[in-house]
Image (tube, rainbow, N blue to C red):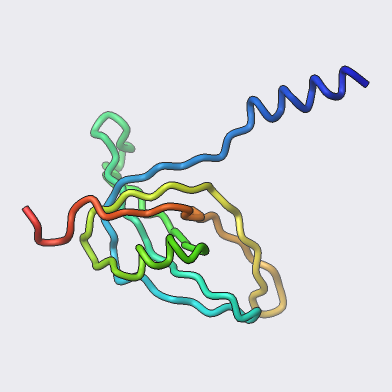
Length: 123
């Protein structure tokens, strides 16, 4: 029994799903109402890659889908505009949903905190 407890402690100590991103908002965030009646805000964050990490094809950015579920994060995101530089914290999530006769999935960042670093057009 002690062995199982040790394995749980090891797993908890090694497993981390935390994300912190800083980038540009690509479009106006959108409020989405789910069939359950819950609401969330979605947006795409463009994060520059350092020159040393770019692919052979020269991919210079990553475009990451994000969603804000908590009231506090939604309030922050709802005021953002394209090209605002923002910082978000959260976790990577894989979401499953029905499409036609099947099920599809996507990976997104579930945002738990969000803040503006610089407004679009600011120096």
